[in-house]
Amino acid sequence: MKSLRSIIFCLLPIVFFHLVYGTDNKIGYWDVQRKGANYFNQIPSEDWFVAAKEAGIQFARLAPDKWKCEKRDFLIGDADCFTEISDRDLEILNGVLDQAYRNDIKIVITFLSLPGSRWKQNNQNVDDLRIWEQKKYRDQAIFFWRDLANRLKNHPAIVGYNILNEPHPERLNDISDYRQIDFLAWNTSIKESLADLNLFYQDIVHAIREVDFSTPIVVDTGLYATPWAITYLTPIEANNIVYSFHMYEPYAYTTRKINNGCFTYPGNIPHQLEEQSTNPTLINWERETLKQFLSPVVDWQKKYDIPASRILVGEFGCDRTSKGVEKYLSDLIDTFNFYNWHWAFYSFREDCWDSMDYELGSGKLPWEYWEVIEQKTSLDQFRKANALFDIIKNDLGRS
Image (cartoon, rainbow, N blue to C red; front, top):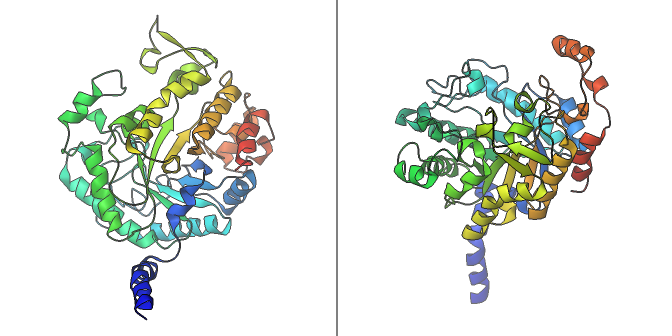
């Protein structure tokens, strides 16, 4: 009898946990490698989720910042002064999440804007850095995320809250690249200030965990989520955290307006700071160079004993017309798979930007494509099986 009472006493915390938080252990979703895609523009239709499922996409990083909204900023209302979540916007978001759930696509809800940090494209192309300087915006961001998590925590499609896409407090000092300064010294100088990304994450995570104990929380590395910046990220003392970075290096190659047919992969490509120089330093970029560039992530994992199941390549991609793009994407995906990291390519079926819509192939588009864009009708006639998208789709199929 005493033994039975002991067993019951031991089980009580487990029963209490499931009564309060439900039986769906969402972090378990990330215990095996997951492969997904990004979608950042207009509200996705049910057809988008159907197509994503058919392509083998398991999850989507979904950013609603461009969605038509009740006020200026979706859900937030006004990033200049957040007071409450828009119920109308939330209803729209829940409808999209329901579509995702019906099609077995999980969602990492991702925000490009927060109070005091309006996304540059929604802010007349000006960086909004107020959240890293003014406490009232930090407090508003905390309030926003606590409320949003409380409202979304029971939705079965949600498997992650990505707190802020590509944070960059370093821009307060006009820093755009790790080669510009001694980053260790800079991070030490801003420690415990509002510009301290680690402190920012601690505050937001704590607020979310007050209302939602189990939904995984995704945190990006600093300076636009660059891989090497993970070195300065401190693991968060909370359950169910996934650490994320983005990979678009070498930037002079992956970006159409800079590359413009000048560089080929594998091959000699300048560093992004020197791309406009008349005599830039060239680096031979190939598979091993990519692995070397990503080595800080591997080193950080070893230092803090972080398993691969808690690392997410939240974005990666390349202009589809770049010479050697098939080899570039293949080498990246092989590298991510070698380390068993989760990954999400950018992007699947963008509705207003062709550069990284890989179903369009690697060639130039006919003028009829742009007519269809203006008419806002289906682009399906231009999306055909091709060697470029097959690289991604075939790997999705091996999940």
